[in-house]
Amino acid sequence: MTDYGPLTLHVPEPAVRPGGTPDFSNVKIPKAGAVPRPDVDVEPETIRDLAFSIIRVLNRAGEAVGPWAGLLSDEELVEGMRNMMTLRTFDARMLIAQRQGKTSFYMQHLGEEAISCAFRKALSPGDMNFPTYRQAGLLIAGGYSMVDMMCQVYSNSRDPLKGRQLPVMYSSKEHGFFTISGNLATQYVQAVGWAMASAIRNDTKIAAAWIGDGSTAESDFHAALVFASTYKAPVILNIVNNQWAISTFQGIARGGAGTFAARGLGFGIPSLRVDGNDYLAVYAVAKWAAERARRNLGPTLVEYVTYRVGAHSTSDDPSAYRPKTESDAWPLGDPIIRLKNHLILRGAWSEERHKQAEAEILDTVIAAQKEAESYGTLHAGAKPSAREIFDGVYAEMPPHLRRQRQQAGV
Image (cartoon, rainbow, N blue to C red; front, side):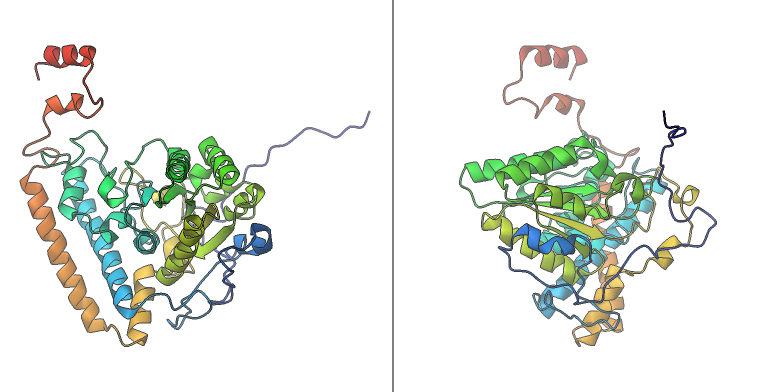
């Protein structure tokens, strides 16, 4: 009998640990404009390469180049810039509020603003997003009230969700934002099911699923791909690869696959990777995928290559698992700075206008915050009524809940 020796287990390791020198040499970045733009009705097997490259529009000089460019006017780009700046300012104010004890918890979008803000502009009214907790840009870019968002974060008397959801777990059917679930990866199966139902009703609305790189290891991710590919559901399957789960680098969830997008290939789903810090590229890819869904061509899987600059949440200390200077070494840059440089190059923006916009947006966000705090915060002011715990669950309240409410005296 051949002696093979003992078995060993492979455990992926990040390229660098805290105290080391950041290293992103494994992130292969093609030149902007180098990746072709296929026809919307392309056969998935003919574009396998797009699951291993990165679609980029903005080059290092701030120019928009290549076949994915030219879809947005200067006015639309300025609006996108302001949306991203608003989200970043909103984040900063809510992070301070959490440190002041006005809310229990918060999660930033720092470095990822282009993804949700640009994607929202590629959708139509009635389309439904099934987001995670780092896609608030869908609401900001969709015109949702910042006061309502802040009231939800504060769990105060004006909280649209009556204090029944953790901070940042927003919900707005009118704005195409399905209630966030704290159980990760459920968004994928829910979005595919919603999209299938839309098709069964012969409706025109599509769905978008959102997941982080870490959650792709969940079984719901794979189950959703089975149903989406089998029934050609009108859904866009988004993976935000920001390099880190809570404290685990993306190589753990990715396993032996070369990219996260490559996982869609085994299901016959067109799969693309896009520069998640490039507003123009995100919009172009989202528009392409949305058109596929609307033309009954089935699902598209999109991996957004980005970087989570801040902590996972206010409960996290990233210095314990990654170098403090790692974000500075990220090769795809800051999405706001990149779009600003592009607009300045086009003559549609300037450093002076940018400073003015920063001041105007800060004033707007502070005014919204003052109004939200007038309705209460976590430890001060009015809160939702305990009676509302029992509301909104059943169309007609069953007898056992009526009894419990009476026993609670509310």
